[in-house]
Image (cartoon, rainbow, N blue to C red):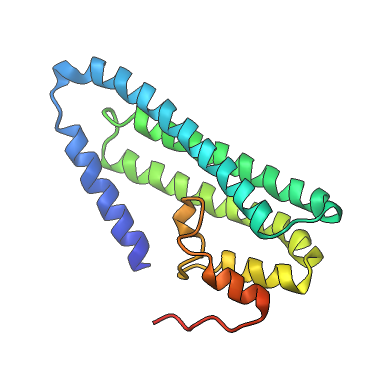
Length: 177
C-alpha cells in the first residue's frame, strides 16, 4: 500500500510541475509530447520483444512447448500494447489534466495492469506446467521479484545470471539480505 501511495504522490507531484508551463508554449509542447509519447511507446514495445526473446532463451523452451510459449508471448505483446497506449494517452493529455483527472487516469492504468497480470498468469500456468524440473527452477529464479535476476522492473535482461545458473544445477541460491 505504501508503494502505491508513493507512486501516486510522485505522479501527482510530477504532473503539477508539468502543469506550470506557460500557456503560450502549450501548442509546441503538445506536439513534442505526442511525438515523444509515440517514441516511448515504440521503445516499450521493443523492450517487450527483448524480454520475450530473453525469456525464451533462458527458459530453454523446447519445440513441444512452443504452443504454450506462443500463447504466453502473445499475451505479453498484447499487454505491452495496452500499457503503451495508456501511457501514450497519459503523456498526450498532460497539459489538460487536473488533479482529479490525473488520479482517475492513474487508477485506469493500475487497473489495466492488474487485469493484464491476470491474463499473463492464465497464459503462463499451462506453460509452467509443461516445463521440466530444470526449466521450472530457471523460471522460479527468473520471475522472482526482489532478486537480482528477477523481473528487473520490466527492463528486459536481468542484472546477473549466476542465480539462474545455480538454480539450473540444483544449488541453493543465497538468501536475500
